[in-house]
Length: 132
Image (tube, rainbow, N blue to C red; front, side, top):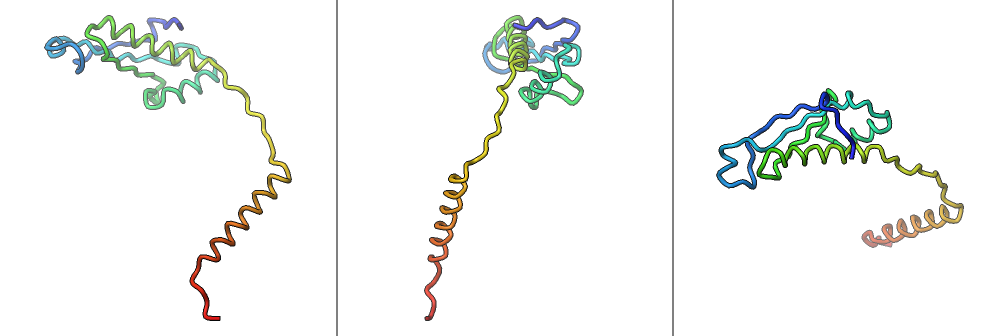
């Protein structure tokens, strides 16, 4: 699990829906955690992958926003938000396997052209019969 520096994190507590009964009407238990990604000092490849993984959760200012309202208590929601962010950062550090370019063989190209010709001929024959 990646350790997040406290200086990079800002937490706000919100009124939540979900589990908690009448307690959710009284206490702000949901957490919205904002993590400054630039402060984490990620490698360039990890930063790019994190932006892709985060999608709409990443702002243009480089903040990752994680909102959690899964539990009845603030502490549990805080812990879950930190776990999710650190898990996402760990995934960003995993390198993807390099793709090896391949070319289709001459025979494969010929088969593709042949099937296209056959399909074209079938479609050509579907028209209305001529007045010959």
